[in-house]
Image (cartoon, rainbow, N blue to C red; front, top):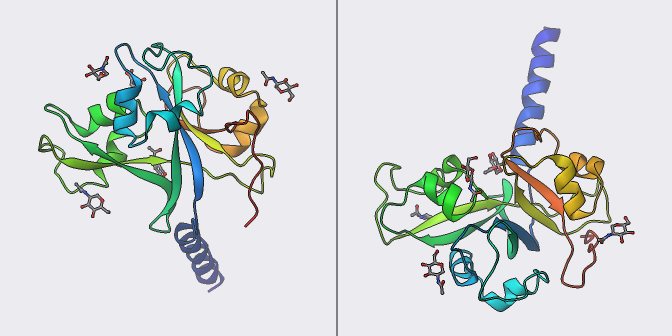
Length: 214
Ligand SMILES: *[C@@H]1O[C@H](CO)[C@@H](O)[C@H](O)[C@H]1NC(C)=O
Ligand SMILES: *[C@@H]1O[C@H](CO)[C@@H](O)[C@H](O)[C@H]1NC(C)=O
Ligand SMILES: *[C@@H]1O[C@H](CO)[C@@H](O)[C@H](O)[C@H]1NC(C)=O
Ligand SMILES: *[C@@H]1O[C@H](CO)[C@@H](O)[C@H](O)[C@H]1NC(C)=O
Ligand SMILES: *[C@@H]1O[C@H](CO)[C@@H](O)[C@H](O)[C@H]1NC(C)=O
């Protein structure tokens, strides 16, 4: 009997956790886009449906918008929405090209800001037959902060970890402590050389904007 009650309580807790994941999003998050050779702002502007001048604001290191350096990252601003009340993310419209697969779209086009599995789940097309020249959904996760961790950070970058990068490199780049990044990303394996982390980011004034109280 007691076991049964404990079981019911456990199931109830699990269900509640699954349901109540987000109520609202936030107007700004950043996508940390790794620039490959041959990539340019026109292309980045197209795939993120964002005008170049709006992107430039968050990238003071870019001196020449016509030529961005391969191997650097561009922070692309986007709105972080509460999707289906379930999780924080944003769905970008992507116009498919000949030869695209959900895997190449996630790992090449969107530079691992999402995964094949995550893209596949938000599109009706069978993964073996994605039509050319159609619009598909590409969903990128995001964060609006967490008052249980800190109220000092209200803007976050969705940052795909690249092979060879570890937590200390990411923390140093963001100018925050390793401990802080860990607390915002419970359960993330920082030694895997892949996966997403949410990293506190500076706004266009060069400061970390605090968490907005709602
Ligand atoms: C920008 O990048 C796209 C995709 O890589 C490429 O097709 C296009 O020619 C490039 N444009 C310029 C001006 O380099
Ligand atoms: C995405 O991840 C894959 C596998 O780790 C890697 O081969 C690829 O170069 C990454 N893409 C970018 C643009 O970093
Ligand atoms: C995005 O978030 C959802 C919900 O937390 C998770 O299930 C999914 O794996 C995440 N997607 C990526 C690409 O990390
Ligand atoms: C994209 O997502 C919207 C909203 O969930 C859905 O109505 C639409 O069918 C999706 N597009 C594709 C190509 O699956
Ligand atoms: C990094 O943060 C420290 C304080 O936490 C500050 O003194 C320093 O100026 C910052 N460095 C950069 C490059 O923003």
